[in-house]
Image (cartoon, rainbow, N blue to C red; front, side):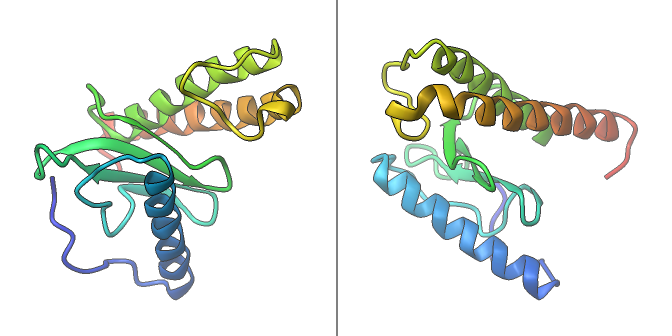
Amino acid sequence: METDEASNIDDPEDAAWVAHQRQNVIDYLASQRCEHNGVSLEPRWFVSPYVAIWAVRSKAYPDQVGWWAISGDLPTDYMTAGDQRSTGDVLIAFAKLWRAAAERMRGGEQSEGYSVGDPSRAKQLAPLLQSRADLLHEWGEESNRSEAAGEE
């Protein structure tokens, strides 16, 4: 995993937002009892002030990403790093996770070991989660198309 020596974000508003989101992720991981070896200083991808994707270092393998975290104007969440090859893949993986959760929430079901928001409001929150998932999927596909075309 890349080192995080210093921030490369020049815009003061973006830098402040990123710092706040990073702390949100750190606090969230602590609340979930996720033992890790640190959260990247900067997001691997972000659209301020809406969403940021964070690399979370593995405790067992400190030079590797053990989890991906997401924060912003959406639920703060994390997932185990798998075979995602790009930022777009990470966005799409969160989208798939949230779409499945939204589907269960619409039916009034709760996933074992996974919840989004107040379970008593699951049916109300499902459409919001679905809309965020759809947007993440769209951004993920766009990111992968840009990467394949050699754009940044």
